[in-house]
Amino acid sequence: MIFTAKQIADFLGGEVVGDNNAEVQTISKIEEGKKGTLSFLANPKYENYLYTTQSTIVLVNKSLNIHKELKCTLIKVDNAYKSFASLLELYQQSKPQKVGVDKMSSIDESVELGENLYVGIYTVICKNSKIGNNTKIYPQVYIGENVEIGENTLIYPGVKIYEACKIGSNCIIHAGSVIGADGFGFAPQVNDEHKKVPQIGNVVLEDFVEIGANTTIDRATIGSTIIHKGAKLDNLIQIAHNVEVGERTFIAAQTGVSGSTKIGKDCLVGGQVGFSGHITIADEVKIGAQSGIQSGVKNIGEIIQGTPAISLREFQKSSILFKKLPELRKEIFQLKNEIENLKKNTK
Image 1: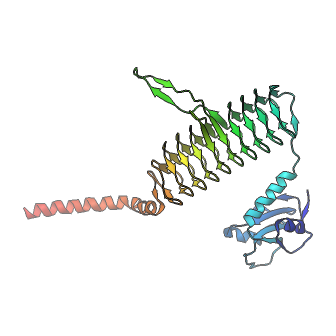
Image 2: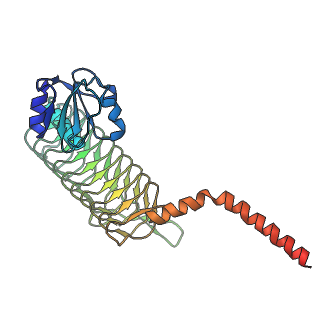
Image 3: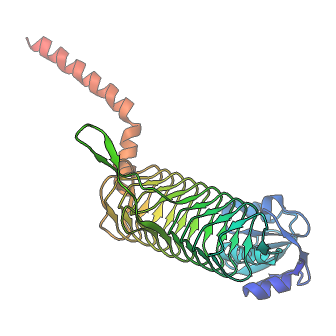
């Protein structure tokens, strides 16, 4: 589809600087801009590209000061990044939508199917499951018995959802994710064997949750593993049994959360963070990448990093000392030699 600068500005509540009738039909990075494309500038370090880009239209913040002559038309908005995200959503919605149930899918006759669905080839939906309106299930998805999926949810190829799990509305589950596999529970026996503990709970994803590719969320031993409303999980994350992730919490790739840990709402967790089990993290906590969280965090809004994790300020001080360890080691050996020499001389 083709959009003019004025149409885009009206949609975003922005101001056109340049040609109201400038037209675009696709999107590009500002440094790779071409005629007929729209770009955005939110990070000041890319400002130089604004004066050389071939993009026809560029979204910028209203606060931006222009220092050189421009070839492109600008649309000034309060927040260029948020506005660009809104345009991407509009662009996505304008693309043709998949609808219909592929005849090569396998759907049990007891399944309740909503309206305007898409179910791709070789997808399996088992007994007594319920699928809400406008949900799209791509090829080769497995949905076990008694699963509930809300409206407007996207489930990408190869996802596996085990029995009795509940997926809310407006969720996105990316390819290869496994929802509801057994939690890692084993009971030691007198003969040094470990007996598997049956995992009879489920997984609950509330509304507006997004799960990245190849992420695994284990079912609870008893009760539910819960990802609360608006939480976003990146690729390659492991969520163990009976974990709770709070509303609007973001967790980056390769993080592992051990069983029964509770993470508060509005938290930000960097990549490759490891959580011990049975701990509680307060709301709005920020955790730096590769941190090891061995105990709970009680203070709302605390910023921590390191293994074991400490306050960011203390971690930064420690990092400075760590860099100086070789130099300090050398000084210690020099002092040691000087002390030994003094002892010899005093004798």
